[in-house]
Figure 1 (spheres, rainbow, N blue to C red):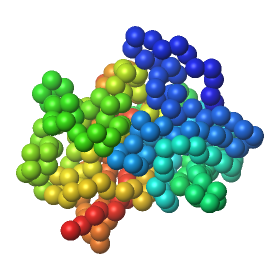
Figure 2 (cartoon, rainbow, N blue to C red):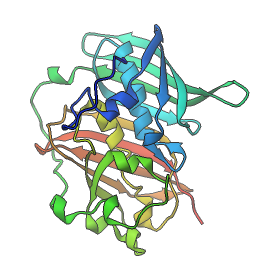
Figure 3 (spheres, one colour):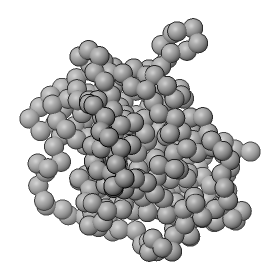
Length: 287
C-alpha cells in the first residue's frame, strides 16, 4: 500500500524506498479496489512495460491476500496500457495455510469514460521464507562474461528521445554473444542474456523479479526480426527470495510459428540460485 513518500536520498536505494517501490505503490480505495498512476518512466515507445505492470498487480495482490510473496502469477495482456490513472480490482479466490489464490484486473478509461480492461491475472501467494532449504536440481547457472565485458544501452548509439524511458531505470549489461542484432548481424539464435539490476542500486525482491523477466530486449531481435514484440500471456514462477547483488537473466526462444513465439526466462541470483522462471507467449511482427 502507498505510504508517505520518503525524502530523496543520494545514497543507494533500498527495498521499500526506491523509484520502483514508489512507481508500483497502490492506494487502497475500498476492500479489493486500488488506484495507481502508471508512471511514464517504465515505457517502451508509448506502451507501459509488461513486467512493470505485472509488478503493480503483484503489489495489489500482496495487500489483498494473507500471504506476502507471489509463487506463481499468470497474466493475459488484453489491451495496451498507457501512462496515467488506472484502477485495480482484486478478488480472493481461496485462502489456505500455506497458499492463497486471487485474481486481479487492471483497468483504464477510454476517451468516452468507459472502462477498458488492460490485464487480468491469476496468482497464488505464499511465504518464501517458510520454504524448506532442500534443493534437488539439474539446472545450472548460465555462463556469463564478467560485467565489465558486457554492454548496456549507454554503450550504443544515443536512442531516439522518448523511445525507451525504462532503460534509464535499469542496469542492463548484455552478453556480447547475444548482441549481433545491435550490429546489424543477428545470430539467428533466439537467445538474450544480461546482468540485471535497478539503476538506483535497489536490490531485487520477489516483486522486482516480475519486472526482470520482461525487461531485456526481445529474443526476436537475435532471430532477425525488427520492432517490439507484444506480450499475449506471461507466467512467472518465483522460487526463492533473491540474495543481494546483480541478477543474471537468460532468455531463449526455440520456436517461432504462425506469427507467435515463446520466451523462456531463468533468473539467477548472486548466490547461484535459480530464483525465478517464466514463459511468455508473444506476437512477432513479421515482414
